Image (tube, rainbow, N blue to C red; front, side, top):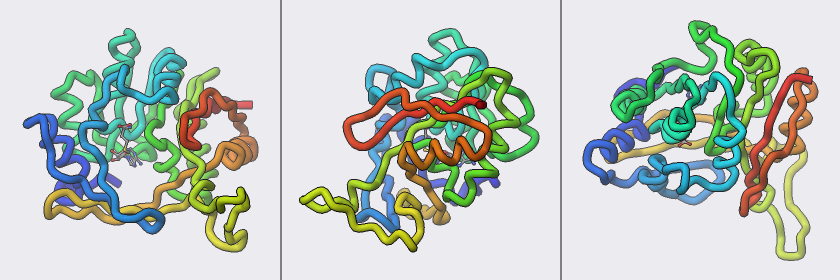
Length: 240
Ligand code: SAH
């Protein structure tokens, strides 16, 4: 699945910001949080402006790299500057257009799951809550099977996420979660830019232990490489 041009609010915000140096409000609606805004300039962050978790990922990247859901191309550009060969994939037509204009040498309008993407990569990068693209815990098996197809021998997946447990913590440290309900990191999002609304989509936040357990069940192992200031972390996942 590729986004329709008229249902790509983040892509249009990225295009406006690229063209004019400013963008309107990129509004975010979700099942978990109050209405919010995504600061569009942050999608254009440079290496120096990236959080520690992301800078660690850039430092660990090696060989041929696949940047999944590359957005404006911020990580792809940082890696190209290090001399790495990067393929950036996006389902947002406007974002791919901007990446090409910004100098991402191989930016493709293609879904991670599209079998036309058939090369092997030494590093697969998924950043800015990269586990979001997995969507739901029930997609983990399909996700890891796809990563297995795309990873070269000895390759690594570098992926970040946040543990949303803090939303459920009481002041005394106890936690209120419904163990019979959906996993607490499964969120439904919708974005809007100006009058353009995108379709709603599933977005997964996952704690490191749960991610690690799913990795193990699917032939991989996960290692915690960095922890951020707010329940966020970077995992490196390799074959067992
Ligand atoms: N990595 C970028 C952007 C993160 S937003 C950054 O850190 O700034 C997540 C991006 O993933 C969006 O631009 C969205 O269009 C893209 N995306 C979502 N699902 C995808 C999929 N299945 N394949 C490729 N890209 C996807």
